[in-house]
Image (cartoon, rainbow, N blue to C red; front, side, top):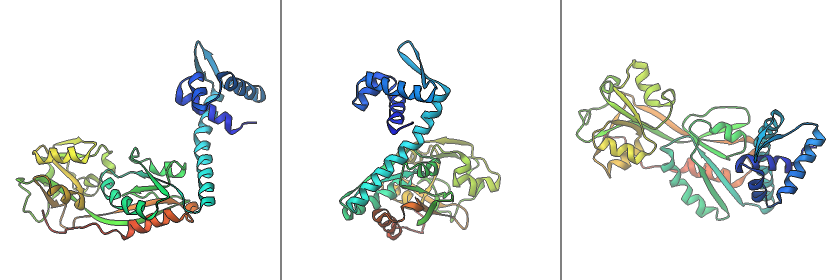
Length: 302
């Protein structure tokens, strides 16, 4: 019979690289760990791993069981945590996944008052997701997903919480400064700076450049907003960002904001949650705070 202990051992060996390290991480002796897995192999009639010197190599059965462990253990951990939270009333940890690079600054505006209002709830933010957050939400790795691109799927809810405009950020002395708006052709001879995201998921491409058949002279990426806008300020290129974020940096750096197209590019930030978590009070409170927060937005040019 496969038990949670077996899954824990497999996961620990995978994470730590050896039986010795796994035993130490699990606070058991190596002999006890080996005995437990040998007994499982005997019961199943299948080998989990093969010894190659001091290292272990998972068999096909072992790889299958490890995949099961990677899916099941987060579910069990989440179930235990949720049951404890129910027993304690209004305690827990809100795990937030980010699919939106610039949304982190917006999130900080919500987290601070949330922590004040819910002193027994911690917040953990995971920024590793670019566009894999839905899977993490379904697999219980996170409790809430912040994204500008909701992916509607059975069992999930996506709530719009914030409207914003995507704009072009240029150095203060740029030719487009003072124009009512930029056209796609204006970017044909520009160096475009973006976050390291596939172009088909970037609004500047999907909603502005691609429909006009325009490709910028060069496309470069940057992991951080600060470095990206330092590059723009030094005349190394232009960037597309939410207006509220761009105008914050215009106060610190010699930058200007230009609308993208006559009508502009309207966007929303969504928060995704599991339908099964609809009774968690602090989760609902966070969503209400996010919906109620009004970021200071200017509609003029900077």
